[in-house]
Length: 70
Image 1 (cartoon, rainbow, N blue to C red):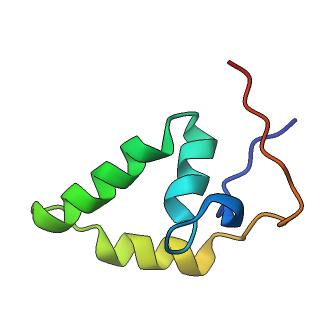
Image 2 (image 1 turned 90 degrees about the vertical axis):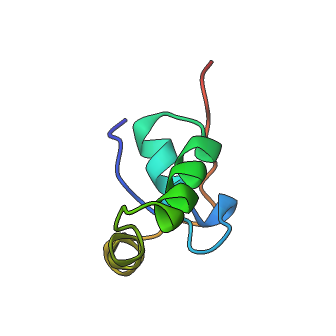
């Protein structure tokens, strides 16, 4: 199955960007969220790229179920 970068609306807090990015990269969503929140307080430009990702990333089908193999 081909991995695609999509907003995960099944596990979202704001827009599902962090959750979709975590699914795509295969990392825990908490790590991505911590990096995004830290980027607000540190001199990293995160707000604009987050908004752009929100606008251009397609959302997943709400009926899709993410299966994680450990």
